[in-house]
Length: 220
Image (cartoon, rainbow, N blue to C red; front, top):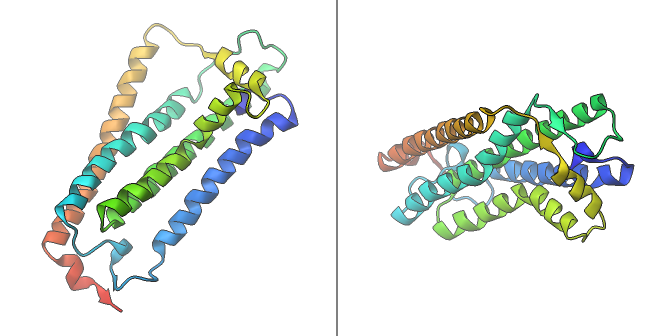
């Protein structure tokens, strides 16, 4: 929504939502590093062992995280440097629109990376399935705040339906091979992130089974 904003009030909503997302994710990250109320302290506060229900939940959560967050990240990466067709809106010069377009993609990438990172830390730190899914749902909701803002704008809930319409009217300019290339990049990025998550998760699971975290833990 930022790249089609014209007036100062229209800039407030997207920047406010982005700032809120980053603030919440940073606060969660700080809290995840704390060791209060923990009987056993390990590296990254990873549990010394987890039941099978948690392990299965961790695998599913990784897949869900990639499905929701990696797609947004891939879209932002693919749209960097792309030319956009503003439709019937010609009131903003091309250079200003280009700057706002790249800033929008940068914000989306930062948010996507943070959501994936924080989600994964929550996944590996969880010791019960219910806590894992409650925390994971909260972080996923934070990552969807920008989409919720757009949906509310389309319903004119924030009295900026015209802004949402301008977003819908914009199209990226691409050749005939773009859609195929876009799908391939999304698949590759999703696979790379999934493999990286499963790789780290497998190492952690092995160390938990081998009692390596238990041997190196500090009991307080």
